Length: 125
Image (cartoon, rainbow, N blue to C red; front, side, top):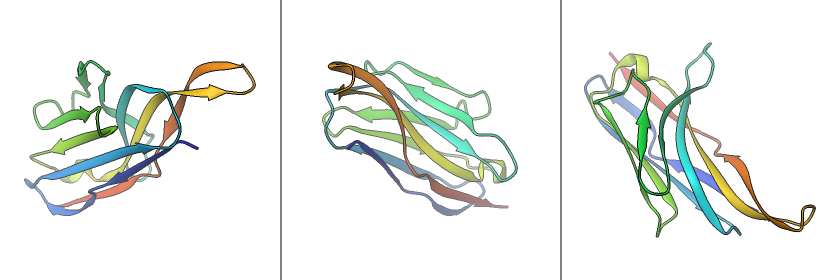
């Protein structure tokens, strides 16, 4: 069973920094793209940043220049360094990954999408 477990959320003042981590565990062959999403109260979930397995990254316009996504393939972990945090960044942050797992049904390796349970980031003004 594949799991994604986030950590690093918390309460921080505006202008502060936090570093989120998300580690994959379980039985799988490889991890392709890894992403961070967030969902603020009363709003839809939105993508924040994404990184491929060759470290190519993309960001939402709202976090460009403030957030940095990175990954350590040896540790099966993706990070989100968040600097210059604003109250508008308050949300539950979710890790998402495309992971190659064995499918008994298909009799082959297939990519499946997995989600973590989320970690709360609260930015006070």
